[in-house]
Image (tube, rainbow, N blue to C red):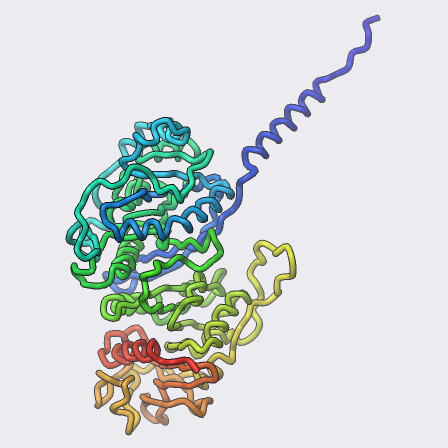
Length: 540
């Protein structure tokens, strides 16, 4: 009789399975879902040649995501450029460290410095792959959508903004040491190497950081354009970049406004942008010498093309007023998932003026708190048309989904509204509007107000608004000063433009703001005057 033997097969299979599971878990132990808020400008379907500013929330697998750090050199021939690199570098290192911990692949791309890193392990990893398919997709020059477009500015002297301008030379030897290169990172200045590495590692999402946006960041072989050609979901982190632009060149704006104009161009023709807040949870970076007043445009409206007209207005302000225009965007819809959300409200933390064009939105309590904190600090508000019922949702709004439940505390079942905003801040009394009339609304100056600074450039005989007339009478503030009245046949005149002193500070509101109103010089002048007036007003 043969000795009884144990059947080890099930045990072996179990060990193999468990071993496999362990390997799988270990290889994905850093895998996380990263929520990013992307800002882009898309062609308008209503106005030829116009663009709408929109926001899109995407959720990325961290293991399918990479950050490329472009040309953050140890020195630059332009002293100003070198100083701004040094200023960005500490926060950039924090962003990269945070991303690395989440499992994001970090790529260091200090161009023309590969000899310095020849024996570095990260350089050896960086040149490991070179796929022919990637090399064939490599291109130079503009993408298809920007073929007929020009840069938003011109430069002289290589874009150096120093006085006198610095002389060009090769000043760099390596990446600035503030940004750490750690195990698992790669070093390359080759688009073919980077693209091949990404394909092999199944990376789909690529974020570009570094300098300079109008040169290396967009045009290098590993830059925005080629990452787009490679089929990557490529994004520019707009607060972690700089531009080579000198303010002595057209359109003769500040260096930092040149940055803003370049961001506009990229969002229109190349790829979306994002800010570092998605990784840090803090407000976005701003250069210390960027002392421009900050205007926060909060836009969530779907009837009057606010996400087209306000960015156009902001562009004019950039050029004419040397201001910094930031946007917090909600979906331009009145129904459907995601309606009750506005992204990038952290811009209110250092805003000097908030411009609101919002219609019936409720927000997560922490986001509503950002708005209330801004207002209660006494900072000025400019409300346009539907801002009178910006946060009046006519009842409670339940959360669409709860997302990640916090470790401590409980999520409120409902989103936050602020139906009293109209009365408390704007001083208004919105309670409906008259129907649309083909002849529009006749707008006239209140007698005695002809010389008010808010009415400079307004036709003394009045003008016509294309929008329906809002019913706001009687106003609910004793401190409201009505400047313009609107009339339609067979109805009493209604206030359509006023200045209010609320208990915190100053607010200006207009019930005008139909998309065709922005083509009327008198209306546009009221908006320009309002921005100028509120930026120079003092809180109580």
